[in-house]
Image (cartoon, rainbow, N blue to C red):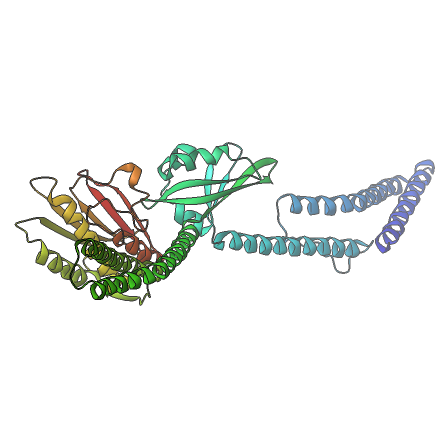
Amino acid sequence: MAFDRRFAVGLGLRLALVALALAAAVAAMVTPGLFAARILAVLIVAACGAEFWHYIQRTNREVARFIEAIRFGDLSASFARPGADGGFDTLGAALDAAIRRLRDERARLTDESRFYQAVVDDVPIPLLLIDPDARITPLGKAGRRMFGAATGVRQEAYQRFGAEFAAALTGLSPGGRQLVRIEIDGSEQRALLRAATVHRLGGQHRVLAVQPIQDALNAVELATQSDLVRVLTHEIMNSMTPVTSLARTASALMERLDPADTAAIADARAAVDTLARRADGVMHFVESYRQISRAPQIRRRSFPAAPFARELQRLFEADWPQDRIGFACTIVPDTLSIDADPDLLAQVLINLLRNAAEAALDHGPAPCVTLRIGARRGPGVTIEVEDNGPGVPADRMTEIFLPFFTTKARGNGIGLSFARQVVLAHDGEIGVAAGATGGALFRILL
């Protein structure tokens, strides 16, 4: 290397100077009468020795300064010595090149770190990081948005999202997955948890991906129900159409064959007429259910909540005046707007208000129905319909939205199923819970 050769040449020259100075000093010492020359020779030896020591230590100082710069992360240090002898200009240039390489590498790593941080921050799936001390930290915007209500970093702080979910945080092993129920914004959903392991600073961390799949399950369930209803109604109507036609034809034939109205023939004709009427009733019943298999067409727009709620109140009080049943309505804030199809949403809420009124009317001396519309944390609104009736039994809360399921003697099981279809078509959620007074509380999240 150039530095080695030039450094060796410089070192040799300085050694030669030291040797010559020593020889001159020895000569002055042994020659009588050269007192001043002796002093000068000693000074020259000291100067040559100092220069020799400085020359040797210069490399150590430059290397030590380079190491200190690396140690403290000072990548702005400079070692260039233009015009320096002994190859130190070459050494300075090499150290500067190393510093620049480290600086470029740091910039590259910083850019990569920012990129991966942006990826984690913008990934649409909520993530949770669990460190070796079992501290839980939400990662990314989706994670902070979903779990921002957690009041701590321990498992107990996540109990508010459901006991089953909190237990899975520590119970799910790396590489595993589990389907759990999770409570978000007062609504119970199903989510798929996946766990992975990452190593950082010598410790093993777990990363949990929390993927809500309720929307996908709802879509599959609705599609399955629609297909089932479509097939059933089609097959039933195909089978009942000839029955109805033949029953009417048989009744007409009996009337022509026996105008005297013989008792036996009259009984048979009455039975056939009854069969025809019941067949017509079944056809009407099946036709009424065909609407369940048709997905509602949503025409969304933004509209103010206050006049929308006042119109619902007028419609409600037209059937149930205040002297029969109380009605309360709250909107928070007053300027709140709703982004939905106003006609379909009104139809859903009218059905819910009607059901609430019927449930509360016969249950107690002071029946009351409450409609609440409020802003959610983040975008969207929450709409609640609550009554002080008998409520929905816990074992039926998951069944009341199924087609054909009803608890009313004269119900047909269409209203709540249709309401669920409309809400899900808005990418929203609908559920039922026990209200503060023990009645039913229907909550819609849009």
